[in-house]
Amino acid sequence: MQFASLSLALGALLLLPTSVSASGCNGTGKPTPDADGKYWIHSEHLKAGFVPYGAAISDLIINDQYGIPRDIVAGWDNATYYSIDEQHPNYGNVPGRYANRIKNSTFEIDGITYRVEPNENPTDEHPEGVNTLHGGPDGWGWRNFTVVSHTKNSITFSIVDPDGKEGFPGEVISYVTYTVTGWDWDISIVALSTTKKTPIMLTSHAYWNLDGFANNETSLAHNHTLHLPYSGQRVAVDNILIPTGEILANEKGSVNDFWSAPKPLGANITSPELEGNCGLGCTGYDNCYTVNRVGPYDWRTDGHVARVHSPWSGIQLDIYSDQDAFQVYSCTQQDGTLTLKRSQGLFDDERFPRTIPQYGCVVLEVQDYIDGINHPAWGRTEKQIFGPADGPYVLRATYRFSIHSTETS
Image (cartoon, rainbow, N blue to C red):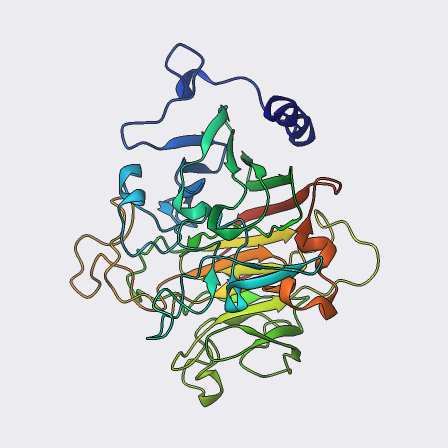
């Protein structure tokens, strides 16, 4: 299939906006960024900035319960820094073509074993790593997308991922559309394999702090309550976070129980049970929770898969998604070296440096079961392996914001 005709097909599927607002063009109809290289979209309640690098959200600004604007996602002030940052925490981007981890950097499709580029957990024997994380050392989060459309409230990015890139078979073409309407930030991702069967699993990798990193009582996100009402189970992992093949129960009252009732992220931080929960020597969360919904449902209206709330700012985030899993990462690897943006934090309080500390944020990823391509018994093949004869990979999610001094039920 030619790229032009494929673009038209995907555009129709996504209902891509075709006009460019006056604030987002240079008079030629071409989308243009601001002085910091960011593209902005607006609704009555939300203002969001994006950069082409990784199709990343760089800013999301909302007024808190006192009417004070808070920028609640981590990122960089200038778009150029995304490509030179050596730590690369996947700030707000779309990791791909396969998000999360791939065991031994290998998978099999139709009897053929493929090896992709490793980039995590290096050893003396394997200096580049023993597994692949977020698509490899030059995955989608490390590449510039193309801005194909930009209106007042919506932006669409595209990427063409060549056959063999990072070792993945086949070409993949993807469109990522972000839209803000009222209190909602909508995400629509469509990807199509054009030549060969290949794994595709995507997500949004935004780092959240609903206090805008400006809480004068704590620099941590431990005060954020989390509710995962459909997540009574999680994917079991080994000490480097590679799935073992087991699906474990999140027993009521355990450190991984976020389903029976909302609970602060820091509620169990001193519990011995939490030690090693996110890997060897790690205390906290970096876990894939399954989303178990029974019977027919409409993901848009039949309940959130996750709710996060900060009593300090009053900001509440309800996440609706068509995906069957949900990754929670409690920023356990932050070490205080990543700086805040000028729109964030406190400027006159020596207690809190203008950096992100360990547990200072939380990543909330809508996705499918991690490493499902290596666990056919889970039945994820149709959700994660796509060829030219198959329909497109589709991810839809709504991040719905509201303001409450206490969490709503």
